[in-house]
Image (cartoon, rainbow, N blue to C red):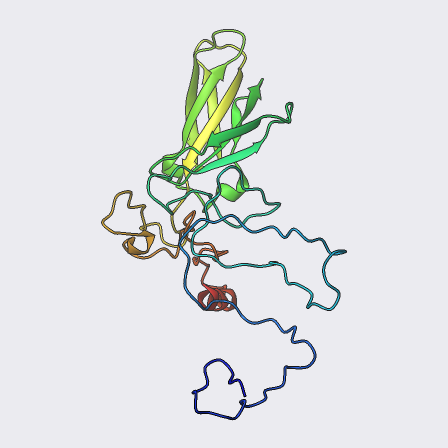
Length: 255
């Protein structure tokens, strides 16, 4: 009698009969185990369509959701909705320019990429045109959101010299403009202000340079910040008015 592979030479029993499993096991096994690959491999695309796929085989799974530690995009990343404040953010190396990239509106073979303006403050602005009036009304929602002492105004004369002057900024609600030569006012305006880091605590200031290896090392924590390329799962900052007790408790649990 010929022994099965792996049996001792003096073993004269052909071996235990183990029946093959019957039916199919199409259950989904959870991922997240095995040897981690650090290569940036291309996602494999199957060469068999649904019509050519064996009918007796388990129906394949496809990735509706995925989790990955690092993602390299060689050309473009397109999404109908994103919750990442900036795509490059502070995540890696020198790729720290917050930017947006959109299709060219007049040429489908071209795209437009802009870099987001940066500065050592959370700047906010409005702009518009002032004609035959001397009052710029600032947004109602600026009340309590911005530092009134940080307001700056830029005026661009239209058509003729008017010697325009910012006469006053009243309570962070209106800007009064006048002409030094008594001319009719006709100009473009741009008004900038700095938001409070924490509207509930005006003593909190932005620390522009700090020691650390990651955004987690920011002194005082990041409760009032959403860091591009870092806080992928956070939807809210934590500051809340004292009366919003229920919401603040739930947010603390989710953050």
